[in-house]
Image (cartoon, rainbow, N blue to C red; front, side, top):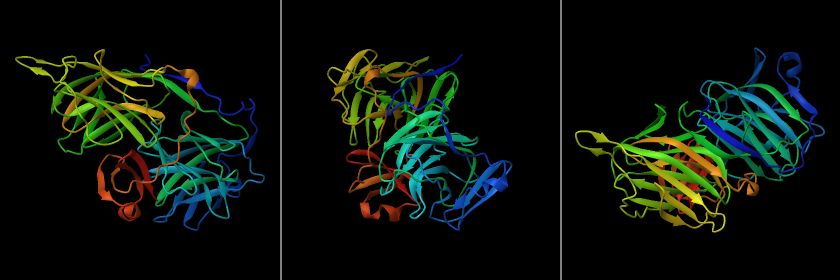
Length: 445
C-alpha cells in the first residue's frame, strides 16, 4: 500500500510546448571517438575519461570550479536540458551549466548536493540559492533537468519539480557539465530539446511514515538521531544546547492552507520546544509547544514568548506504575479571507499571527535539544489551487551586518561576524546565516 501521496497541479508559466520536441543535441557517450569531439575543457585542471558508456569528469583544482563545455551555434533561447549524473568518490556536488559563455566562462550553474539540496549560482550574485531536493540519490544516478523560456528557468531532479528562478543576463549560450573543486562526477545521457517544461507545483503531502523518510524529507539536524520505525518518525536530540532538527518537505503554500501532524513527547526535557515550521526564501515561522503544556510562535529570529500553560495541550508523559504517553494534534491554517495564520492544538485555537510577507515553499517539523519525539500522520495541503503560481525565488538578501553562521547540519561555524569577513572565515561549502531577518543561504566557493 502506498503510504506517501502527493497531488500535483501543473501550472503553465509559458505557452505549451509542442508535443513532439525536436532534439537539438544529445550524447550517451557510447562512442568515445564521436563524443571526444563534442566536449571542450574550460580549464587545464579539468580532465575527462570514457568508462563503460559514461563520461567521467574530474576537477583537480583546490578552489575553482570547472566544466566540460559543448558550444551551440545558433544557441537556443528556449530549451530543456537534461543530464544524468552520479557523485564520484569523495564528491558532494554534481552539476551542469546552461547559457554558457565561452569568452567569460560564465553560465547559470545548477548543482545537486548529497545533503540533499539544489544550489543555483547566478552570474553576479555572491551567494548560491539553495532549495531542499529530497529525491537526490547519493549512490545512484540522478537526472537533473533545467528548462528555460525567456527569463524563466525551471529545475527538476529525478522528474520532480524543485524550484524556479528568473534572470535575463545570459539569454543563450552553450551547455556544460560543471564540476566543483577537488571533485569527480560521472555523466550520461545528455539531451537538449527545443521545448519548455512548465513547473509542476505540489499542492498536497500526506505521510504516515510506514515506509521510511527517504525521497520526501530533507533532515537538517545537529547532534540528533532521526529514523522511521513502527510507523512513526522518531526524533532524539542530544543534551547539547545547539542540537536541533528540521524535517523539511517541499510544498508551495498559497493564501489558504492547512498543515497538521500528531506529536508525542516520549522523553527528554519538558521545557524543550517542538512543533511545526513553514519556510520560504530567507524567512521562517515556528509554531511550538513543550512538555509543560506551554505554546508559542516565532517569525524570523529571536526569543520565544511562551503562553500558557494550556489545559488543551497533553504534553509530557505521565509516569506512575505505568508510563502514559499522550498525542497532541498540532495544526496551522491560513484563511484566504483574512490572511491570518492560526495555531491550534487538539482542535483549540491558541495563537494567531498576521499573514507571512514571504512565499511559503517548505513545510515541516522542528525541535530543539534534549528531547525524544514520535511524529505521525503529517498532512499539508494548499486549498487555493487556482492561486498557485510557480515558485520563483527572489534574490538572496544581503548578508546581515552581524550574524551567526551555521553549516547544513546546524552546527555553529562562527558567531557575530561582519559581512566583509565572511569569506575569510569559511572553507568551501553551503552555510546558513541567522540574524535579524531570519535565515539566508551563504555559499562559499
